[in-house]
Length: 155
Image 1 (cartoon, one colour):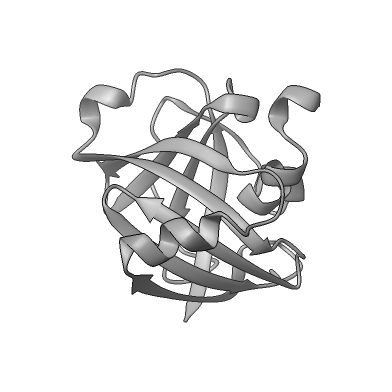
Image 2: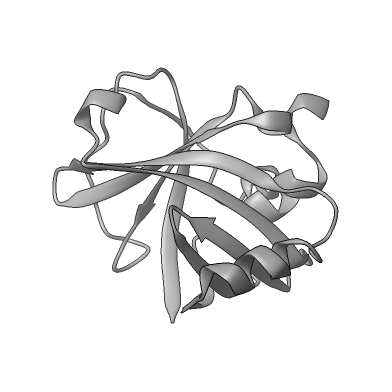
């Protein structure tokens, strides 16, 4: 239930041919407060409900709970979410001993591409591909809950 994750901007699209999976994701927030976000997500043909706690001081570690829900229920829950939503394609890219999840955003967040890597500890070392840019871990502007209310196009 603990998520340890680091986030990076992505410099270009050199990663797309390396992807082993690709899914369109649409998500909304029933609660986007940083202390406890409650997210509804449709990923491909599956629905998910996720609760995340506030991150630690570095923004790397936080509580996360997720469960799959029926697609029809996810669609209904999306209709009552807060204003603003996230629309993106997620690419899964194996690199070294890890898999990067690279999100290419659409709509009001068009032009933003973020890579995330999940780790076993905050001090774990990992290889960085050439297309990885500046680290944005802990910068709340790059969290999806923030982007749903303050889209990238308004920055």
